[in-house]
Length: 543
Image: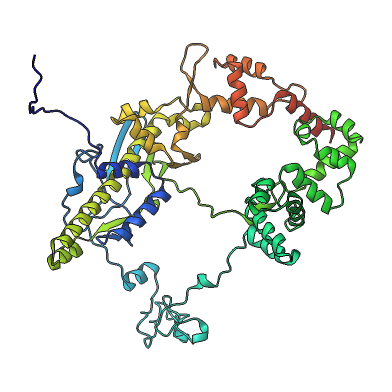
């Protein structure tokens, strides 16, 4: 057969990951904080998007829309009438054998925020910033506003130049008067400026301080610091010893033993016996008190006093200054008991960003555009804004759908506690709601559920299965962990349970589990071995 070149037309199907689809998948796995940061970037980048300042108390639930459970389609070109508003408020009911999911409706309306509406919502009168001569009206009970006598208002604070109020009527920012929290590095740098005058030694000191972690320990090898600065190890050691004398006591230590030794030296309690105890901290952690008494050369009473003295020390001296800003966990979903005994699953609308698409502004810009480039830019911004609002709505609906199915599957946990947590995997949830496992995995990542039993990550409800000894229903790994902790908490010093004894107790409760699994679960709970627990309980009895 002769080889020749031909032009052939073929028809096939393939899945193309469009930029809009990639964005929808990305939004699905973001946490609330990451989503808020992403939306803020889009607000700065896209002039068609606006932040919704007001939020309705509730939205009426509506039926599912066709195609809401799929990320496919070309929704980026959707034409929304009016200003598209995304609001994450929705509710689902789970109870008994009935199961109903109702998705919230994201209404299309234009929000307008002004001083009068704000004043009515606060139940007070707010003076207009630009009407400086107008006094605040009296309240309903006839009492004058506390700000009206001095010409001040809740929104403006105009005074003399020395008072902080500008001549243009801009209000003073009270946050500018709040002192910044002193960091550990700044605190040490202030002491370094007083303790060391030599420029080279001060440079070494700054390098050491920059290497100190938030916990107070030296996070880099001293040899690396000395080599980087081109100085001798002896000089770096001398500067390090000076830094270790700074407040807080124990700072710039290279390990726990050195941290405790620095604090004991400052208290004049680092005698040979205490030095021997600090040098054998692993034995102290294992409660090997008879061996420690021989090493330190002290009796039982002196050893107990030394151990109590070590416990009063601070193992992390830098934590009093704190680290970075601590972000609280904001639940994505709340679960509460309904009046009929069912579980109500609601989206936490307060943690969801709300944006509007300003079609009026887009139309004005397009009509006044003088060239095709400007029109193309505004059209692209409008398409991206429409797709973003649709993606946010889709994300909220998917989270609600997955969370509702989790509550339905784990109904016994919400009703009776962790002992009744069922084995659950992603495939079970995905099959129940007709989604792919990867979608369920993205939804449950970095998402939290507030329940009457506490705040849980959605991943918490997915646990491995432990078979039943009698061939009955399997047990959840988390429930077995809880049983192990219960057995250990109830043991007495005379009958401390070994891992083998725990296995026998669990088999009596129809839990078929291996000894190595018990040891793994015990270590994950940070529970010491039976030997260490026996020593600790006997030591507590002797006190």
